[in-house]
Amino acid sequence: METSVKNEIVIKQSPDIVYRCCTQVESWPQVFPTCLEVKQNAVNGNTREVIMEMTVSNAFGTNTIRSHRHYEHERQHIQFKMLTVPPQFAGMHGTWSVEPCEGGSRLVVIHTFEPAQPTAQAREELKRNVYVNTDQVLTHLKAWAERN
Image (cartoon, rainbow, N blue to C red; front, side, top):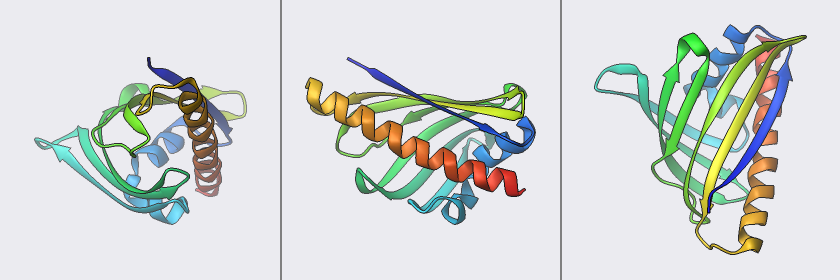
């Protein structure tokens, strides 16, 4: 059974700038303390479809994860599917969406996952950890975007 976790944050910046911060993944190691390295390669030369490889060190350990990302620039929306995940997960996919709001932009991130161990306890623990990790990422992204 899949579980979804939703995080959102308001950033005092235009949607264009916030979306650009979400797609400039090569800059992430300078923005997020948990992000050690990121590479992004277009699929068949299509910059709207990329494979991102990122090494992170967080509550799930140090892992190199790969994700297939679809950028919808006109909607300021990113859809992703994890190709490799930390060992606690059987799979994960989700979205990043930027929308205008009073005071700037709202960034909404949804992670939908299946735990490797299908117990209620594992699901709840992963849900908590995904929320906390994403909240920390969004806090750093907000600070970065508001400096630009």
